[in-house]
Image 1 (cartoon, rainbow, N blue to C red):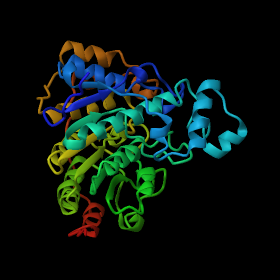
Image 2: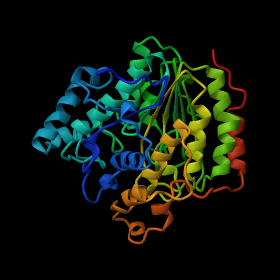
Image 3: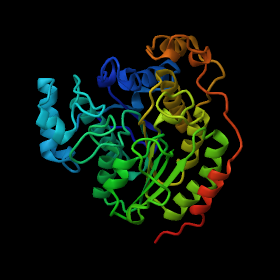
Length: 376
C-alpha cells in the first residue's frame, strides 16, 4: 500500500489505540481527545481516506534513538504486569508524579511516537502532516514526566536530522513549558526551540533568560494571556524569529491547555489563536508537522484540533456545526464541574468567540527581549 504525498494534500495520522484509553477515572487524561478530534473531522466530511494514515507502533530500536533501553524495558514490563516495583517507580517515575500505570502504558506512547516518526519520514520531500496524537513534550530520555512517557517530538526531529535536514524549528503553544524537548536539543544548534507558556506554572522552567546554550527562546506569558497578546507575539516576535532562522522544517506543538476553558492552566486564548498560528507558519518552511499536546477539556480540545485540520486544508469552518458533528460532542464525558452543565456553544460550534483584550506591558517587554534576533 502506497502512502499519501503530503506535498499534494495535508496528511492526517491517527490511531484507534486512543479510543477508550484512559489514565484512570480521576486523572486529567481520563478524557477522550484524539479519537473525538478524528470523529469530528470525519463528521464534518473533512477526512478523505486517501490522506488518512494509521500510526504504527514504534519499535524498541526506533525509540532507542532517544530513550534509554532500560527505561523502555521497564515501560513494557509495566504494561504487561500492570504494576511496578518501588525501585522502578523511583528510578523511572512510572506510577509516580501523575504518570500512572494504565492498560496501554507502553503501547499508547509508542504509537504516538511511531506516528510522529512516520510523519517526519512522509515529510522528507516536503508538505504538511497533522498528527494530533503526538506532542508529549515533557518525556525524558530515561523517565516519565508530566503525563509523558516518551518524547515523540524529539524522536520526530531526530528522524529529520537523520534524513539530512539541518535547520529545524520547534514551536510549542502548550500552556506548560516544553522542557523535555528544549533539554533534548540544548546543545544542538540545528534545532531552535520556541516555547510560549504560562509563567510560573509547572514544570517551573522556561524563563525568558533561559536560552539553553543558545538553542532555545522562551516566552513565559502572564495569567489571562489573550488573543490580542498572542497575535502581537506571533507577528512581532515569533514569525520574524522563524524567518531569521530559515528552517527546513517546522514542528508545531498545539497543546490546547492554553484555551480559556482548560482546567489545568489560567490562560485565556480562544481556538482562533491556534488557527491563526497554524495558518501563519505553514508556508515558512517546506515541511510542517503539527502535533497535539496538553488539553484537558474534551470539548475544547476536539474543537481546537479539528479546527486546526480545517485550517491546514483551507476548509471553511461553519458558524453552526452539522448534526453529525454536534452528536460527536454531545457524546463526550467530562467529569469536572464544568462538564455537568456545558455551555451550548461547546456542542454547536467549532470556532470560539474571539478573546481579544489589551496588550499588557509585560507582553511588550517580552517581545523587546527577542527583537531583531540573528542566527548563524
